[in-house]
Length: 155
Image (cartoon, rainbow, N blue to C red; front, top):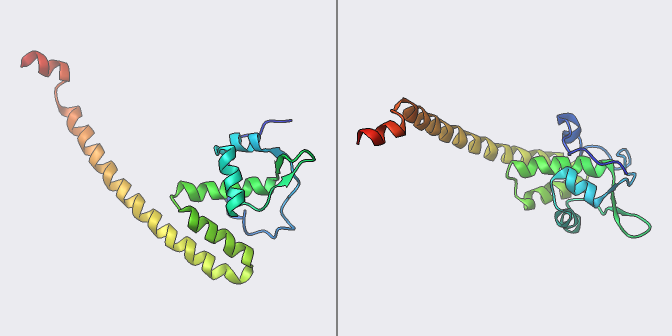
């Protein structure tokens, strides 16, 4: 069985992960949980937990009962990974997935959830930029001081 490359899906594929109808997505079971764990950076325990709480649809099983993930599952994991990187709480991720499952009439609610989260991300980015400016200032300050070894000798 081929080893999966790390899950790094382009913006379009990642953004479309929950937009396609389930029938359109490739749901052919292909990938063992170990492969998906390695490719996604998630543990097998986390993958099972995502399925148990409903972040992932029930995963197909092999004849021996082992989980087999589809390419559609991988796309969804990539999207969920992006949300996780932004600091979105699991409860909000689950709310988003539930809205998707509820149907197209939830587009406004999905957008509102993502807009609110985007604002939180932008605020954190602004805070990080301000913190980076402080770090840059301190590094510049220390760069202009005599070498620490020279200071010890002159003391």
